[in-house]
Image (tube, rainbow, N blue to C red; front, top):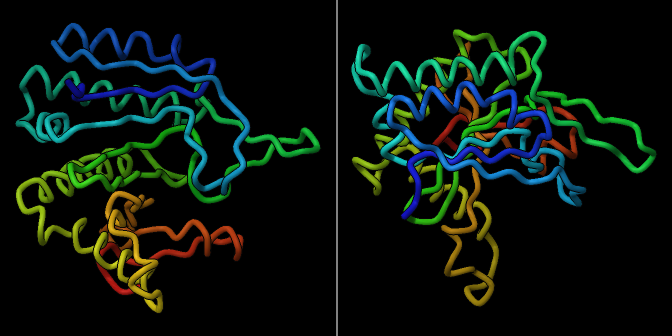
Length: 228
């Protein structure tokens, strides 16, 4: 049975720092699965390296998050997300990720924080990772989390024509352009992994292109569901 909420930890400090927040969830009847993995050495793009804390959430979790204010589960989830912000994204964050290069020097985050992300895996197999800008405020963080929950809920309600489904189709179409049928992957949907973020000024989600962003050393992105 898949848990409604999985907290995947890649930071040696996170378990103790998040203990009180996790205990609050348990008191409210929400029992998250906690997975602890030692930080490792990664050979892929910085953009794709796991954040210090990865929150894997199911449709049921997002549904509970959107419940009316005042309900026990809602208040517990809201408190948990606020504490996550304080520990990972707020001033003086105590749960952090550090990337080291070959020389031993540390490599700072550039656009998005490496401390926290929220992940959703669809029944179709694709994933969407919500990232947070380095300068995100508590207000914008809460809006991003709430809008992401709505985005997932809209997909569950309409898995064919939801904004997320449209984006998945667009990404598959872009990657398969010019390829002969023999090289087009029948499991392409399962290979789609989107990096999305809430664009405060545009008030909508954008999808970051990790390869183009890494090459240009600046953020390359497009509006969710729109042509790149």
